[in-house]
Image (cartoon, rainbow, N blue to C red; front, side, top):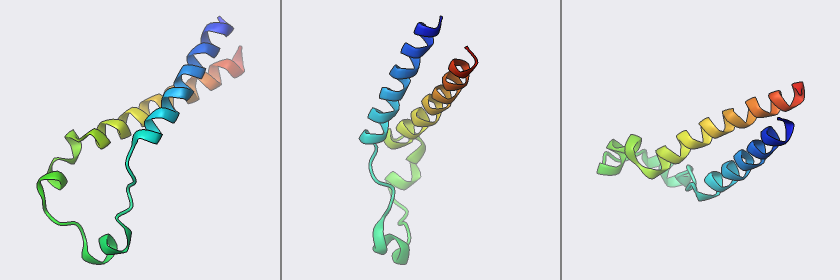
Length: 75
């Protein structure tokens, strides 16, 4: 059981690393802070974009990683 959970944790860790590296930067720089965000097609459909899906995947796999860490601590 310990080995199986450890393998799952390693896979979750590698997946989190890969997803974080694939995501684009969130900062718009100085121009975004001064000018604001324009109403464009991309800003209206942020929930369906690849970045939104990657952010959701990061949250879920990160939570699974934390749970697996707690389980390994109890074993």
